[in-house]
Image (cartoon, rainbow, N blue to C red; front, side, top):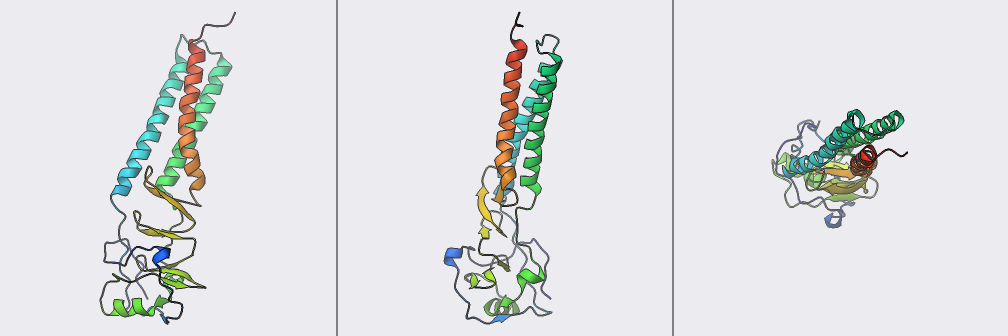
Length: 224
């Protein structure tokens, strides 16, 4: 049975672009043999983690500023806010910061929809791929294989992926329902994490705006 382990750095094929995929529906497909081992999955590019650090630092900075300002507004003896206003400030900032942090964690460490190596996705192995693997050759120069019923066989990941999936050249994985690779968060944005992507930034900035509003109210002279 094919080796499902990974990720490792190995020689693999050309960019998994559907536009460059070869239509090989007439090629015979070969099932995996007991002695046939798939090449290990290539690791993501190192820039991916640098991108995530950039996004995470920005969001967490917003969160820390919001929490600090909210605490000052609520607990400062000179605050002119009523008890009710302080509770509202604490709840709003707490919810906004929580949404931002949870969304950031889901984007950074959740699964956006990666096509993993399983018996269902690796089989059948296209004949030309199987022949190269048996000969101990790399898959450089091979184009992706297209099949009307199975979808696209990515020669980088060695998996059959749906037609709505895309091979990300930064994460170096095929991802279902792919929207884009975000250079700010360093992760693929797809159907599974798209909601969190739209929530993380606005939630962080909303917490800042909320603090500014309540800070202004706290410093304003009481209405007589």
